[in-house]
Image 1 (cartoon, rainbow, N blue to C red):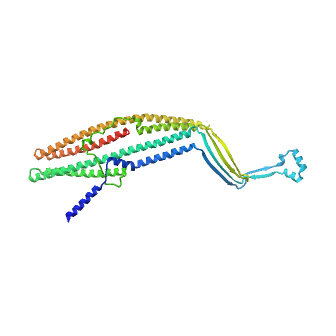
Image 2: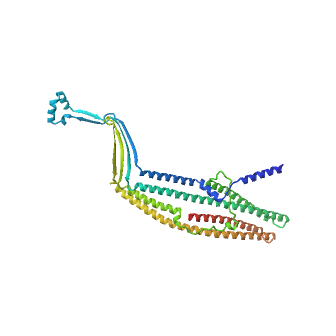
Image 3: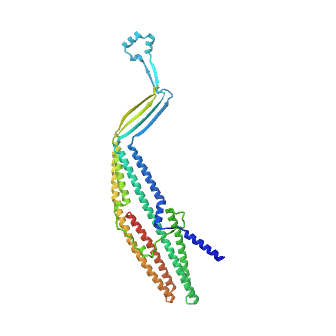
Length: 449
């Protein structure tokens, strides 16, 4: 019964291990591009820039507005006194005296008070088509298009950065996983040495101190194993969070075999690349273009603007409904604004010069970055070859020291030192393998691949 129960437990554990998802590097990168928050923010930036471009396009069309006013004052807003007698000439008074009675003639000489505009309604609808605005509408639309282009370049830069970071996490996880394999192999090797020494001590052909040295080394390996396992858990969590795999906390990654020569040889890549094809250069170039357009806008703000329009108006100010249409033209000439505007134009011109100089300086830095990244690839590849040869030498050294110890011609400390050197050589090869892929990644990004 106990055997059956143990078999069931074993099968359940195997099924759990088998159910753990495994991801290749390509799958990790694809998940990062679809789930990372930086990519989503960059995509929202493109949508916002597109809406801004569409908003700028509406400036080509007439501006239609409507306004209405209703008022009711506490008293009449207009009041005047009219004296008809003062407006009549003496001859006119004599003529009227012949036809009007005396009472009516006397009324003409009496001042009369007239009030108006106590309440009323005013309404107007107008449409104004800009004819000339100093190029502000055209250049504003061009600037909005540059903004949309910039947002697309920023998305490309975000994708590159996300891919780079995700791949760095991938190789970091691959490195600690490979170091765990090295620890497990060292643990197994020490277990074999432990058994051999135990037999030798029991037989009286080895000193008990040899067993103590082996046990101390086993404790050291156990401590290293604990640290590596914790590092694997932490890096896996970082990678999962960055790539949107938080629901798969126990996922595995598929890592190329470091012992296969084809996984060590460098990928076929070309040295150097046209700087103008890099998104970083294109972004700087767009900044220059935007600075030039902003200067043109500053000039346009100080030029006359012309518009034509039509309107429809209504009011009942004199207790009469009155409506009428009109056609009009507007001309706006900034006069005093030229004083401050001239300084604004000069400031924008200086900003153009700054953007051009920044483009030139950063172009040189991008070329230096390319060369430095290529040097890093070559150096890390040579370090990887050296680490590979060191493993072969350390492995042979370990084999010889074990044979010497078994033959009684060397000490246990020499054997354990040889085992430590072999483990260190494997760890250095793991670090060199991870560093080579990171350097290769940096170079590919430096040339826009």
